[in-house]
Length: 156
Image (tube, rainbow, N blue to C red):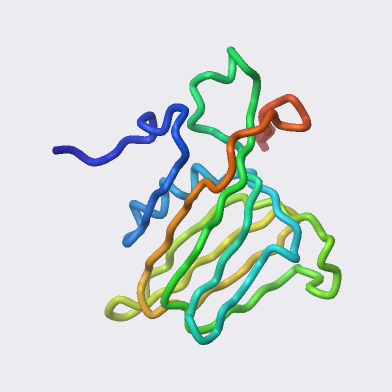
């Protein structure tokens, strides 16, 4: 038996978990350029869960040449969250559209650490966690990307 690979996603909906930095790097790659309105962020304090409903670009899709670039709605959750903070976000405007660039894990003492969700435009969300436990799950069928093209990142 071997670990799942990035290419194994193909046309199937994703349902991935992350318990360490290596696992989270895969989720980060798959959620790069996901967009979401600020209103689709939730911190459930009692459950110690932070969740985002994302419109995720399907980077793993090998069929883009056949049907064009696609997005899919996905839920990204983090459990064991003790505190949430943000910078560079206007949380008073729930219609603000945010773009996720990366998801990183900064380990602390024992199992603790910090998840940093880096957003376009110098925004960030910080999740102080008792332990890393993340899940990415597609919740809709893929749909053609409204822009009809893949996101581009010009080299600096």
